[in-house]
Image (cartoon, rainbow, N blue to C red; front, top):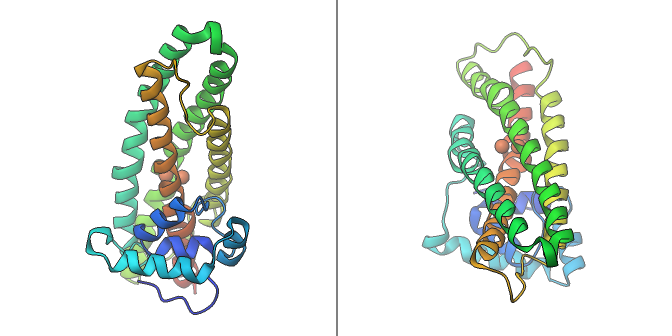
Length: 243
Ligand SMILES: [Fe+2]
Ligand SMILES: [Fe+2]
């Protein structure tokens, strides 16, 4: 576990453990796309005492059922494997299911709720297309490079730079796309009133909102693991390898 002596950023606090992630979520603090903000600033905005929040995180981490792998220390190859199996695999299964559920809800309720549901479907379709292309780039270019680079650095064989120059270049693109996904999630949350189904909503509609809320939670953790842990560690490894 990382010991933080100065005022941490939100991302640094979230990187300590999944318990920290859960506490930040409970307080409605964005720890992935807004992870570089100082914890003080984020807490001020929410009217929370940052010291009390850190104590809450420490207490949660001390509870054995909330313990989790410390990804700030684990080998990058294991972190990449975890992102692929826990998050990319989830998205590849869930995105088409949600798309079908959304189409069914739109079909059944377009008379009274057509405008909102069409807007929701448009944001979701753009997010789905972007995420599919985004994951492809991570899986084919960035992640294999990180895994290979870690192996070479560990064996003292680090030599030629990757074909894209520096790992910083694909990382900047990925971060830009994460911001875009974050904005799409905000739009969907706003359109649906925080995923609150209207009283007349059918079961499919309720399942759609449950699924979209779960997608939001999962993407926040997924983007956090990449923006706040994998990418900074890959950049640090690259500069150490080059040095
Ligand atoms: Fe990813
Ligand atoms: Fe990503």
